[in-house]
Amino acid sequence: MSTVPETTEKKPRRKHGPQGASATLEPKRMGRPPANIDGEQVRTLAEMQCTVDEMAAFFKVNRDTIYARFSDELEKGRLVGNISLRRKMFHRALHGFNGEGDSTMLIWLSKQYLGHKDRSQDEVVSLNFNVTVSEIPQ
Image 1 (cartoon, rainbow, N blue to C red):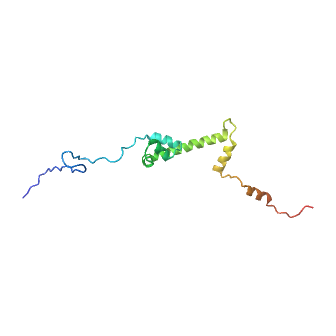
Image 2 (image 1 turned 180 degrees about the horizontal axis):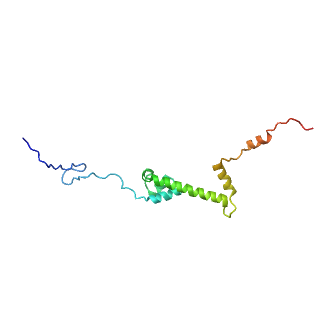
Image 3 (image 1 turned 60 degrees about the vertical axis):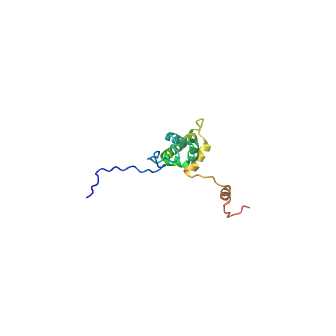
């Protein structure tokens, strides 16, 4: 009857590298080292409404890296930027630079948020001339 030793040590298999004394036991890392990007910088750029392509160029990485690693920062930054912009727009519309308000900004905001729209010249003409005459004056 053959007995199997209770402790058998397995030698690690060589995955990469040449055979012999200089062979490595760990696989070689492939690709670029990870880029050192600060998430706070990504959020700040997103607040300024920078595009992902602009951010990727700034950090010298692929745009997919920005999307993959910083999707939360992108979303939060864009939302905060939108809120800041909207706050400034409403303040300018109501108070302007000299405290009197900005009528152009008020008109634009009323079109955006209240559904107001300019009438085309055709609509104005049809409103003015769409009258039936029952008597002709003499």
